[in-house]
Length: 110
Length: 114
Image (cartoon, rainbow over all chains, first blue to last red; front, side, top):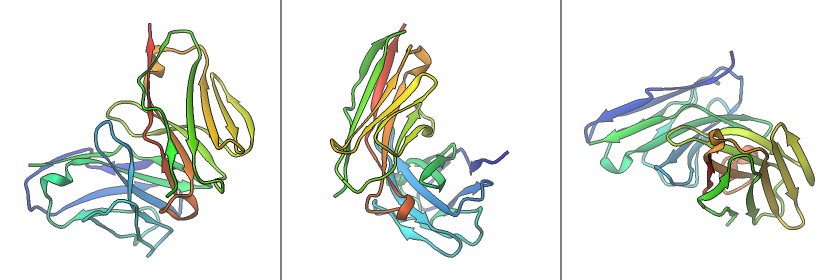
């Protein structure tokens, strides 16, 4: 079944740790996105990719980085986590303008 | 600055009634319009897309688009308690995301009262 996956679903980590949030999709979509969303607040685009070896920064400034070595895989990395990074991170992919979201990763940095 | 505006609510509707959610957008060049449903703590789920003026119906949901007025709406007929969620309006375009990039509104919180 074609889908979009994110791991881990929940992560609690200490300040200064390096973390990678995983996102994979089996829908064959070229375009992928990372959004950040605080509880009850709007979605903010932080990174996107048109395809392999393409990455762009989104509307919201973020200290995270992304890579796109394979079509199906779009991981997000924080080199040194801080409490201000506590949020929900949503991955999405699209074709024909319709975006489909993964289940999200809820990150808490202590 | 491309914007999508929604009333944040909460919008309270009795069970069985019609819920009407509205959205306005600023970019006249926008071509694609979407409604997402987001339950608390979950990710957004695409429920409707509309690309041309008029109405589009899918089950209990009807999306309405008026490009001249830059207005999109979502009607939910026979509202059920399970429809209680935040509804996000999304419009293609915006400052990021390329041709498929979407600008999201802040969402309307809908409560269906049993």
